[in-house]
Length: 116
Length: 110
Image (cartoon, rainbow over all chains, first blue to last red):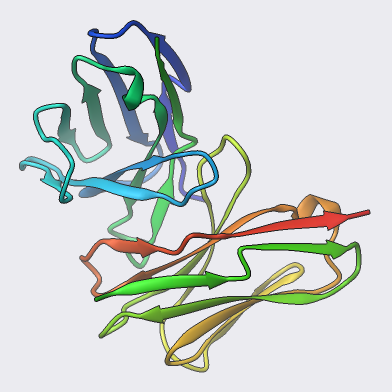
């Protein structure tokens, strides 16, 4: 099956610092990757859609200068949370859409970010 | 407005007690209805994609069905290891974003 990895799985950082989360599709190419945020006992909220080689499209209410997304290749997208604050603490999940498997979307295991 | 809702919010079953989870959608021009399973602290695990009304797919104790307005995830003789949150999601076009429902938290008691 299609595998998507995320790194790191957990990160704790101090308020004001920046954190980078990597999302990789391991056995397939993904022209489109998505970044979601999930609060406890809530569903996934789409933050942005990134297409390889172009700028990400952000959902309404998501600050593009705070959540920097780079989709440098067909297998890698990164999310950088800049100047993190405690309210940015959340579970961040990426997904990748396979171009050769009926456009199905596969999710990574998630990254737990805690800002102290 | 495109929307996906799920019911019930939470479901508690005895082991072996079959039931169904509901997903209702108002998405014009549906191009894919997805079911995922999510365990606590983990990313969603893909289960099924349904594309047209009348379509059914099965995997072990799970069967997903689709009508023009809703989808059902039937769980036959569930086991404790089926306990998880089940997410439903809909997509308008092959290149559009996926809209998630709020999920149903399933607990299967031994």
